[in-house]
Image (cartoon, rainbow, N blue to C red; front, side, top):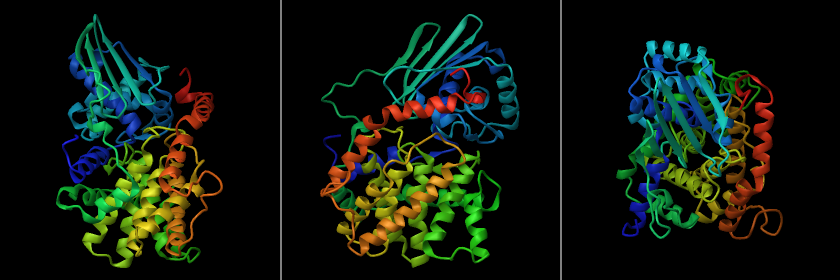
Length: 437
């Protein structure tokens, strides 16, 4: 990685962090592990006697209540079962995209057998999925950790099939590629060759299709549909911000309720991918921005969100839409005529506004949080364009935006460990899907 120039490094980073997914990425990681274990074991799901899932608390939190595409059901067991009956492990986060109707039926029967046992992983990794499948005298296990598709170990009948070597501390890997600064991110977005970044533009189109599905179907809380209906009633005004919130929350409505359409993710999350792209696309549409300006705004939004997420980890007690909203505010400010200085101010305003919004698991209510974040992104950007920003002398903000981002990461990481534990304790104490975890 050291031999790569900035544009190559950041393009590689975006290719890693901006990928399509079908379904919420935490239960999909469970499905992927199960699909891989089934493949290694070489038996059909009907022969399975036990499926053990050892999951980190953040995986459990985000998988308990979210809809699983194509099933009409929610939660961890059906996600695991879909991986077992028809998941394609070669498709990564789209592992269950092509499960047949027969595969869905078999998955539901597998759940009804009650052989799927869930326990909590007690290690330090926040993203950890281990599945152990037993069929007669045979057994296969798969471990995914650190990122949603990063398979670290595969074992069959006690023999290690694959195990990732430990990377020496002085050897840089793709997962360790970091953005240098918000200034560097902005320069890349403004100056880079857009040809290798076509997937960023395609991601916005993909997420726009999910938004349309949310507006036409009856998904989740129907936040997006409610906004559109109240605009038609003249209760809400038909303005740029309302339109952006409508689109973004509609896509989250559909995704959280199990829509089968893929979305383009950011930093391992579909809702974050939706939040970095659709508000920016909405502004470009309403202001008549040309294709290149939209493309550069989307690159800025996506990479600024990745930059804001650094040091925090993929799964935290802070709602991930916050860092995605930082990206969206950056893209909006640029589209409305802002400079790097205005982007700095917009990011400072977002940090001062939204820090503290907690993640209590993926569910239909995520569409409301996404709506809140998009509104905040507009307020932050508009204030920034008037050269207004939260003072670095008070609160968690610093005069240096990079220090403010580090403070945000500190709060979202170590600062909210206990909050994370309490949130999950509350969730699983309700019984139902989470009982026995």
